[in-house]
Length: 153
Image 1: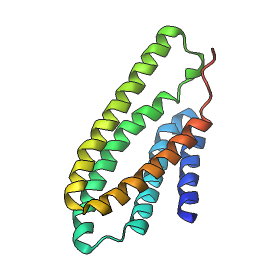
Image 2: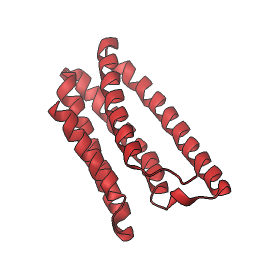
Image 3: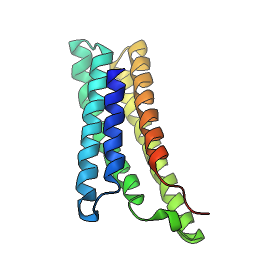
Image 4: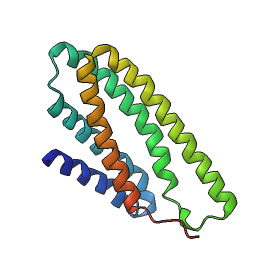
């Protein structure tokens, strides 16, 4: 439970950084994502009990995945740095199209890298990893969604 609380703290840092001064937002978002990645890795490391062979095969793939995922996530988060709450219909449509594009990119990326991870881990261990990953991502998405203001209708 302690590790889950730490993850939520990192996510809270990310969300709180969205309201800070404009010139520092990019740098602070990158820092918050880095902290979240480190916490993510700690949760995986703590809960997976890899053998040496599994660890040697798993971590390079996961690190590559996280780096590519962060590129997409950073673009998505940056969309919310602007005042999106007062968009007109055309701007809202463009905003939604970009969000859908990033969601598609994220889904394709995850499928690609999870297939690679499935090849280096036994099925039960991959399933455990997948459950942990899903839990962390769901908690992060909930926290981000909860803290973002709604578009004015």
